Image (cartoon, rainbow, N blue to C red; front, side, top):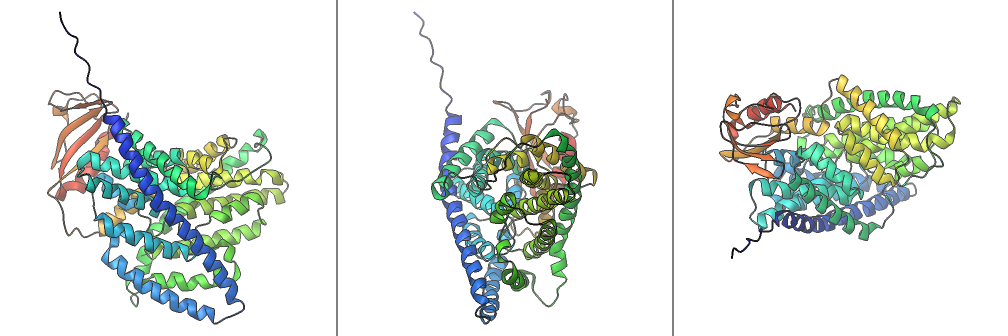
Length: 512
């Protein structure tokens, strides 16, 4: 009598989900405290400038405090340059295998530095730092579990997804953002781990902040079809402004470097001091802009006031980001989009071209459009704003504005802003320690010249070796006669000295 062999269960995905949940819970706690301290800091700064109207000498104290914070943050920036700015380019560089850093100093310095910089009222966002904090938590988890290679990168990606989810309470969009914009990998193991991590982090954040969507904006009715023409115009204008934003944000750091009298790591004194007139006259627009977006969506001021706010926030957010302080552009971009959407629609109302009840819809759509154009991640923009606002009624206007803004920026030659930031970072980064060999991966797209070819027929870049081919749920060891198909994930070992050249060559081959 023959006994039937029992099929061995494959628990790899369950194990990945469990790991993702653990990382999500840890990252959710870290980012929720980060978010809470920033909100309390903004309340304290708003109160402080209110008191300064009665006690003018508090402005002198602010300058002295700014000097002290500048010295502390400048020292940290010099010691640990990976805490600079948003943090998203650093995470993307990690996942691409082009840079790495020690997780613990980045974690605590990014946390404290971000609370100081963003909580002081500067026009910086918490979302980029939250992504890096989550990714760094994942990196620490991977280090404790002795994970390496692809397994380590998946955990880092899941931590990044958890960080954004905890910051925005948007687990689906957070997972998609990491896959679409940061990791560029949609394999099953990556997305289920990232989604599990994002859901766990969202649960923790909900315990801290409740169930109300982060940007809860209510409106009375859906947008009539007769008003859809204005969405096209709005998308074009957002695309033009988005390209301008890309140009300025990528150059502002070099403008600061021309200030020979001030070391680069201590430029933040300029941002802190120039915040005084904003805090004195209009403290309600301080910070990343979360409360400003909600107020505009609920009761938008006049078009002239909104135009002034847009110009001020554009200039001041550039000044703040250019200093290199730990803070991002994610929420400031959404805020600028909301303000411009309010300005555009209020102008239409003034000219009698639309009723005032439709202003909130244009505010919401403009947020998605501006982010879609600048980041060139339209799917993330649509899902993110939908989750943050908490309703699907505006989905079609969001999609139209996002697509038009994206195409406008693309026609003007704009690249995804975070990828461009990473290129700038890698160009100026001095590698002090490198490993002789790194592993990177590339998905094969429909337009790729590799599709349908045998491995031996491909002129692979010098310094690269194809070691693995992932096809759906299968992992193949490639041979010369292995045929490459659309959707395959190519895993290569690359010499560190040729990493950038290989990456550029592979982008051409895979059709990215």
